[in-house]
Length: 194
Length: 194
DNA sequence: CTGCTTTCTTAACCTACTTCATCGTCTGCT
DNA sequence: AGCAGACGATGAAGTAGGTTAAGAAAGCAG
Image (tube, rainbow over all chains, first blue to last red; front, side):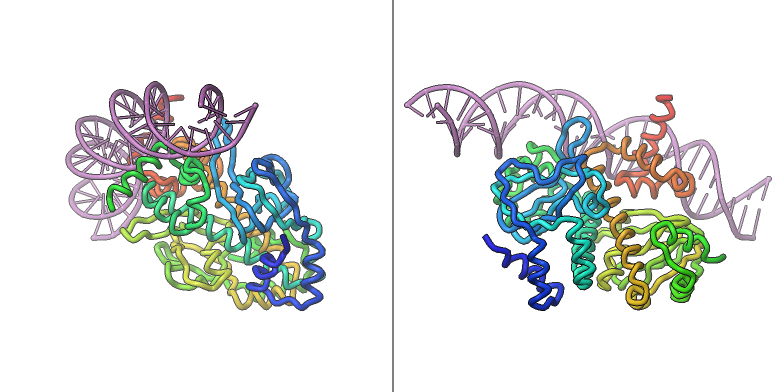
C-alpha cells in the first residue's frame, strides 16, 4: 500500500516541487487498523489528521444516554478524524472507528506545524480542506432542518453512492437521524414507487 | 462608531505591533445597513467578511418552496457572512439580513489576501475563526440529530442568552427547525414546569 | 386614543417518526 | 450440520411535532 493516492489528492490543490513532496511524505506515517479499532476516541485529543488509503470508517458522537450519532463516513480518498479537536488540540467530541480493516496515512499535529513553516503552500491546502468540511457541515444543518427523512436519504444516496452499499443500514439511519425501522420503511416505499 | 471592538477581538488571538494594526485597519471598511437590508444574497458571491460593531443579523437559507431556515444569528462582536462562499469566492447558499440597523466592519476578499502576505500572522487568526465556525456547525449537526426540540431550545438559550430576548420567537423556531406554534407550546410547558 | 399589522398563544386534528415486539434471513462459528 | 448473534422487514400502538384556524397581545402610524 503506497502513498500515491495521497499525492494525487495533494496535487489537485497545490503545486509542490519534488523536494517539497519528499519532505511532505517524510512526515506521513502509514498505519494499519483492524475492523472495530478506534482511530480517535471521544475525550482524547485527536493527534492525527487521517487520509484513508483503504477501508471504511465512521465518525460519531456518543450522547449521555449511550446512543451513537454518526456525523460522517470516510472511505478511500477522504480525510477523517475530529478536525475541531485536531486543529485546537483539545479533547475530541467524536469517535472515529474502523468498519473494515483500514490503512491510513497520518499527519501528526506538531509535524504539520513544522511543515507549514517549511512549505507555506500547505497552509493553503489545509485551509481548503477545513473549508470544504465546514461547507459540508453547514449544508447538513440546513438539510436536517428543511428536508424530511426520505429526501435526506435520497440525497445521501446521490452524494455517497459508493458508501450506501458498503455500510449497514442501521448506521445510515443513524447518519440520517432516524431509526433503522423507519429507514427500512422508507426503502420499501421507494421500491414500491418504481 | 469606531473599530475598537474589532481590535479588542483581534488582540485576543494574535499579537500585532502598532504598524501592523494600522495596516489591518486601513483595509477595514465601516458600513451602515438599515433594518431589512441584505448584506449577502443567496446566489451572489460573498465579497466581505463582516464583523458586527452594532446591530443584529440573521443568516438563512431559502429552500425551493420559499421557506427560510435560519443557520445562525449574529450580534455585536460576532462575525457573519457566508464563510464558505467568501473563502472559495463561489455563489453563496445563504442570505444575511439585518434585523436592526447595523454597523459592520467589512474585510474584502482581495484585501484579505494581500494582508495575509503582509501580515502572515493573520492567517492564523482567520484559521481560528474558520475552525470555530466549523466546530459550532458540527456541534449543531449532532444536536439536531440527538436532542428533541425542547432540549435544543434550552441549549440555545444557554448559548445565546443575549439573542433570545432580541429576536422574534418565530425566528428562533426557524433556527431550531420547528414551527413557531410548537415553540410556543414548549415555552408554556417550561413555565408550567417551574 | 384609534386602527392596523405583526407577533404570540391556544386548541383540535393530522402526520412523520418512534417504540416495541415478532419473525425471517444471513452470517460465521465450532 | 446446527446453533448463536447480527441484521433487516413488518406491523401495532404511541409520541413529537406539524397544520390550520381563531383570538389575544403588543408594537406602531396617524
